[in-house]
Figure (cartoon, rainbow, N blue to C red):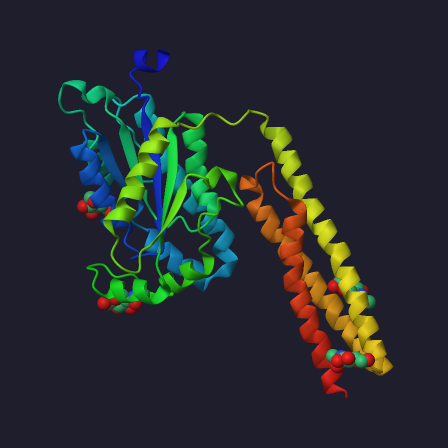
Length: 345
Ligand SMILES: *[C@@H]1O[C@H](CO)[C@@H](O)[C@H](O)[C@H]1NC(C)=O
Ligand SMILES: *[C@@H]1O[C@H](CO)[C@@H](O)[C@H](O)[C@H]1NC(C)=O
Ligand SMILES: *[C@@H]1O[C@H](CO)[C@@H](O)[C@H](O)[C@H]1NC(C)=O
Ligand SMILES: *[C@@H]1O[C@H](CO)[C@@H](O)[C@H](O)[C@H]1NC(C)=O
């Protein structure tokens, strides 16, 4: 096989461990590590916190300055990509040291150290990377999935679900505690794996990590990984540009349909107000408020859809997205309407 000739690795799996800080990802990673190593696998934990040391600072800075947010997001993405690139280079050619100025090279060497073959058949032993990070946006996890597709690797995700309070109280007993604001910020942003919405997230399990993990849960994790190892992903067809165009079309279509639905809701609201004998000046004020609320809503929706564009799958159901989104506007509309009517009774 060509893969073997060039010294690259075949049977490998990228396992994403995601969840809030202090949800128990590192503890789980250590447990998987020792079980997998006992089975003769070559396994390593990829600790993003150690590889990208400035990170904690960045998250704090992001909160302070929303102006810089986009910029930092971009930079932060470069660091994550550097980690994935090192993994890819290792898989392609394990003998050549990988390097990147964007990650801590000592930490990376430690990471790779664990993967050195021991024993006779070790060259062919399954290779497992446990990616230990928060991965709070789907787009962050999707980057890993893309690498797995490109290099025909197994891919799976374990989400450790842990409520805010448990994470915060657990943090207290860590040797390098994380500031409360960082945890709070992540609670707001976290979008856990959602196989219904993103078909590429189908190899995911979600574990309740508020208490310590049961043996049964742990077995599910090991089964998930074994199954991912024996079912590597295949490359998505390389019609990238067409897909990009389709996705933009999808985003436009969502916003267009949502706009139509909003108009209907606004005219319904105006009709109701009229039936309830609202005065003309109150009707005008109502129209203006609804109009403004609609504009804000559509603006936010477009932003959100475009943000999701990089990982929207082809089979995305536009009507479903519109329906969910419209519920939010409808609530807002009802609130404005009843406020206007009751204020001027
Ligand atoms: C790089 O990682 C190593 C090992 O984790 C650590 O000892 C060292 O302090 C780190 N260096 C920097 C600049 O953070
Ligand atoms: C984590 O614990 C440290 C000290 O134990 C504390 O200073 C910090 O505010 C805590 N963070 C959270 C998120 O509770
Ligand atoms: C408007 O009037 C209808 C009757 O015409 C009444 O059932 C409804 O509760 C009123 N709506 C509000 C929001 O007051
Ligand atoms: C509705 O809002 C848009 C933009 O926010 C504005 O251009 C338009 O004049 C408004 N229309 C009414 C009827 O208030």
